[in-house]
Image 1 (cartoon, one colour):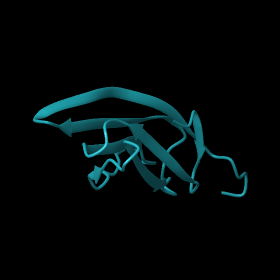
Image 2 (cartoon, one colour):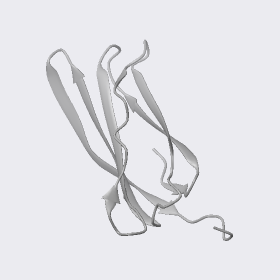
Image 3 (cartoon, one colour):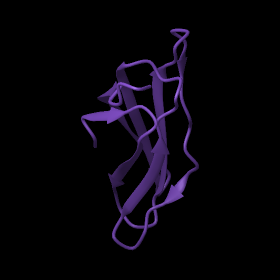
Image 4 (tube, helix red, strand yellow):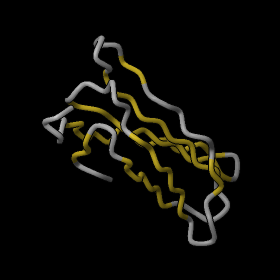
Length: 96
């Protein structure tokens, strides 16, 4: 889980679970209009090591500040969610 990410940087979010479980993930952040937006990632079936991984490019219209990654795992009829994991979006390139 990254602590800080730069606008337009590609970051990786990973989740460890039981192999074969289905993982769901999403990111929420504020855009420059102060609207909370973000993608819901495509569901992933955990690999043989139980790992689910998503890559996300931080949008160019992301507002610097707090954002969150949320995840949920479904397996054997049970759904387990994790609370939001906060991270910070920063403007790292002064030319932007």
